Image (cartoon, rainbow, N blue to C red; front, side, top):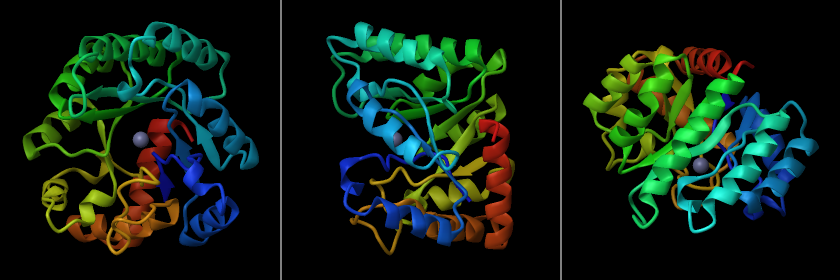
Length: 253
Ligand SMILES: [Zn+2]
């Protein structure tokens, strides 16, 4: 299994990072992809990637919730880093209409700039879209038409949005939410082609059942994979192999 979206450079993992990585390996996780957030997270992320080379693979990007007054300068700096190379993807980028709409137009501008970089550097993107999936897909559309590869991380849209996204060439990131009893995500994904699905934890957030409410970690991909396999009506081994093949194709692993 490949954890395509995991913030294990977060300080919540400082005390037991080695054990977290060991548990991930024991659970069958072959790679952990690290989305960046902003300028402050860069150093911690790089440090982690250097500690586990080839296993923890960093992305570079500006998270929509961190697009604020100084966003242009921050994006310039992150863009310089991205262009130096060594990143598996552009991420985490996107739109977030849940928290604050003050900088929504700037979020859209920052997203388009980062999609442009992804195309230019031939890198895939990891997209965060909260209450703005249609909007993010609309901004992505011309870039997708030119061959950009993209994952809608922590996909939480409707069946219609899932169908449209897959038609447009997006992959859907499947995390702990699929195990929640109050979510219809399993039902929505059961109708999707397995070739378009990848696994993720979004650790330390969104732990799957039976760890819901606790810190999430890559080893819990096992629970997510099992629930997705059940939804698709396939064996967990088959689901793990298929989602890994998908992740390898998208991220060039
Ligand atoms: Zn994230």
